[in-house]
Image 1 (cartoon, rainbow, N blue to C red):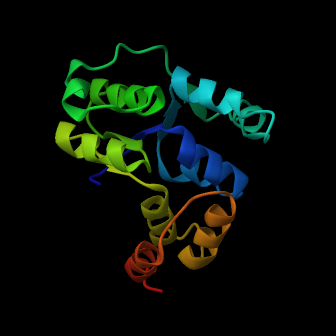
Image 2 (spheres, rainbow, N blue to C red):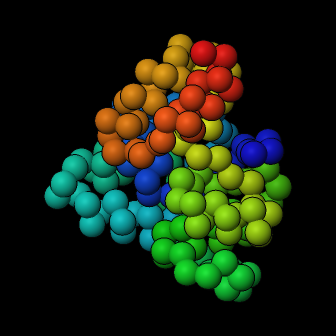
Length: 165
């Protein structure tokens, strides 16, 4: 993961952290938190199903990035959604200590290929516990799973182990 201080969020982590009541932790862990136009469009498209778009629109700590030219290097990755593509392009364009929060397996493979630092929702929960911001990764995982994040048992157990649970 590296030392990420500035984070560009993909839609899925933002949705499950918001629905799970844990989204405020982002501003306590990272110095700057960004969202791309494509991610906001994804959130707005789901606004009739949930209140995530309305909720995140009110966060003073969540900065909207302008539309970014997609990085040419994304062609090396194959087919990604527009949200993931913008998130990775924005992270690539930022100076050091920037990274992406992505859960999508193809986007994570692409981040590795492009040498973009990244963290997933589960890894973020481990980091939040290490910083003393949550008491239990297990409880937090239950909350984001209840909000729609799919985490298999092997990964859940690995995250709990990394958190010392």
